[in-house]
Image 1 (cartoon, one colour):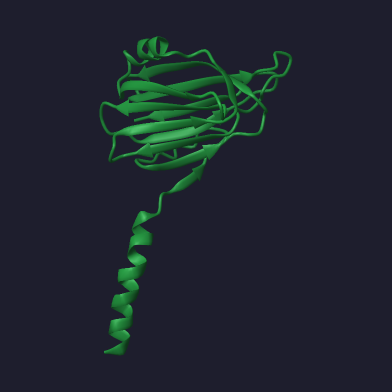
Image 2 (image 1 turned 90 degrees about the horizontal axis):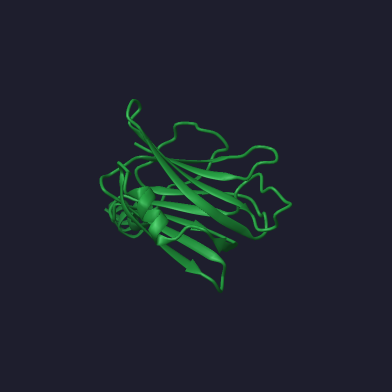
Length: 170
């Protein structure tokens, strides 16, 4: 009886923590087909201050995968940021959205009009909003999903080329 009571109390107190855990993955440096429906990808490297140059999107009808690419560069023109700066990407299944947080963004060349134009052709993304914190130099993109999607995040980098963050949605 005592053991049963201890087991029941343990389940009551521990289960909220077990179910509240959010899967966190390190973004890979190449495509690995690690898709998630909810959870977090983190990645990047301390490259100092960076510029968000653009966001591109392309849907492949054959594979039924939409690729979203964020192009970043170093704020200092003579330095190529081989990897993107630190980022945190949260896939939120219940809210049907993806939150992309970028750190150390000193300049943003993407505005709401450009974002809407890119997302207008999207198969998975209904709309997007940009939040820029000029004080902390952080930028957050909220991508509202038109339908539930599985998401994979990885970095693309090449020598003497700027880093890119890639989201594949299926």
